[in-house]
Amino acid sequence: MASSIVAQLHESLIHLKSQQQYRCLPSLEHQGRYVVSQGKTLLNIASNDYLGLGGDTELQTEFLEQIQQLPVVKRPKMSATSSRLLTGNDTQLQALECELQEWYQAAACRQDISASEPESYSKSVLVFNSGYHANIGILPALTTLPVKTLILADKLVHASIIDGMRLSQSKLVTYRRYRHNDYEHLAKFIDQADPSVERIIVVTESVFSMDGDCADLQQLVQLKAADSRIELYVDEAHAIGVLGDTGLGLAEETQTLADIDYLVGTFGKAFASVGAYIMCDDIVKQWLINTMRPLIFSTALPPINHAWTRFILAKMPNLIDQRAHLAQISVKLSQAIAQRHHTSPITQHIRYDSPIIPYILGDNGRAIAKAQQLQAAGFYALPIRPPTVPANTARIRLVMNAKLTNEDCEQLIEQL
Image (cartoon, rainbow, N blue to C red; front, side, top):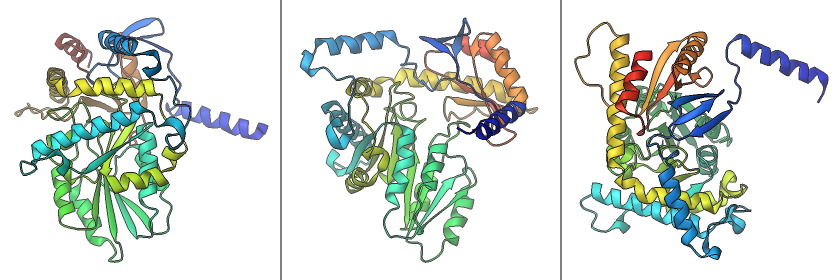
C-alpha cells in the first residue's frame, strides 16, 4: 500500500478520535450473566441475548449430552465445508427449515379460525448465514425482474437493509425512506408513486434495534390492502423469541403473520445461536435459491450450529415465564427513565414494546462518560454514537434480559 494512502487513513482515524467516534474491538470473557472486561466482572446489559440463553450452562450441558448420545456418524459436523448448493445442505439445516415452517403454520392457524388445516398457510422457510446476509441479498434478488419497482423503507431501518437497497441496482428500481413510523408520510409516497410503478415494497423492522420501539404492523397491513402493488417486508430480528404468545414476534402478537410477504428473522439474538431465515411464498424461496448471491456463494453454517438452533426452537414456545419477566423489568426501567426525564408525572403505564431502552444523551462525550460511569458501577454498558444512530442522539443502549433480577434493575436505575 502506498505511504500516501496510509497517511490519509491515519489522518482520518485521528479525526474520528477528535469527534469521539473512534471504535475498537473490546477484549471480553463471558461468564453467564457477566462479562470480564479489563479484569473487572460486569453485569452484561449490552447484549442482544434477550432471554439469557447464551450463558445458560445447564442448557448447553443438556444439548451436548443429547449430541453425545447420537451414534458418531450421526453427530452434526463442525463445518459445512461448502455452500448449500454444493454439499452444505446438511440434514440438520433441512430439519430446521421444516420445524420453523411448522412453528409458523401452527401460529397462523391459531390466528385464522377459518383455517382448519396447517397446510392452508402456504409459506416456506429459507435459512441464511446471518441477518446481514439476508438483508443484503433478498431485495437485490427480488428486484432483478424487469418490473418498475419502488422500495419505501422506514428511515431507521438497519444498515443491512440500507445496503440491500443500494445493491438493488436495476434501472427500474428506485427507493425512498419515509420518516420513522410516520405512516402518513409513507401513504404520501405511495400516492405520489408514478402510475408506471408496478410494484411497491414497503420495508420496516418490527422492533427497531436502537430505539426499541415497534412498527404498527396492523396499519401497514391496512395500507397494503388498499393498493394491490404493495408487498410488505418486515425484519423481526429483535422481536423473534421476545414477543408473541410462542415467541414468534410482533407479527404473532398483532395477528398479521399471513399478511407479511417477506418476514425475516434471526437466531443471533433471543435464540442465542447464529443465522437467519425468511418466511415467504415457496416460489419466492425457489427464486432466492437461484438468484440470491450471499446464499449461492457462501459456505453454509456448521451443522452443529443448526442442531443447537433446533434445540432452542423446541423450547422457545414454552419460555412464557421468561418473556413475562423480561417485559416486567423492561417496563420498570422505562418508567424510571421517563420519570426522571419529564417534569410532569406519569399518568399511564408505559406500553411494553421491547427490552431495548435507549438512554439518549445527545452528545458523544456525554454518552462515553455515562458508559464509563456505569462500568465503574459494575454494569457493562456501551455508548452508541453516529453513524449508528442519527446525529446528536448518542445514547446508552440499555438492554434487558430474562436473567436480570428486579434487584439488578433497581441498582441500574440508581446509577441513571
